[in-house]
Amino acid sequence: MEEGILLGHHISCRGIQVDKEKVAIIVELKPPCCVQDVRAFQGSIGYYRRFVWKYAERASPLTQLLKKDIPWKWGETQQKAFEDLKLQLVEALVLITPNWE
Image 1: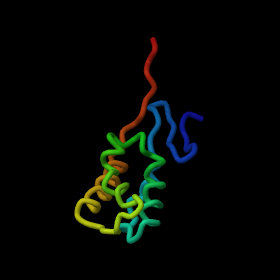
Image 2 (image 1 turned 180 degrees about the vertical axis):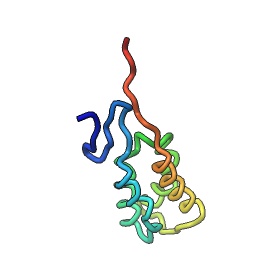
Image 3 (image 1 turned 135 degrees about the vertical axis):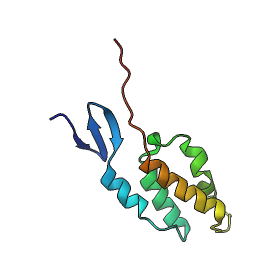
Image 4 (image 1 turned 135 degrees about the horizontal axis):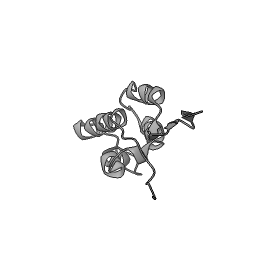
């Protein structure tokens, strides 16, 4: 077998990519309306964090909502971060292993 899906990743001779079917489900998600929804979204997208350049910076506006004693406020900054993370998954790069020869 030259390629296939393994643990949510498409593995081939080209490298490792996100599973497009899983990404399609994440892209269809609506914006979170509570802290639990933010946790669920970050759990889903966090699985693919290595495909997202500067994941921690991009997710920071959402992570701020998870802090204790911070009132819930979904604003433009959070919406942009939410959309940006989904876009980064759609445009995710292929991770390849180095050629040691």
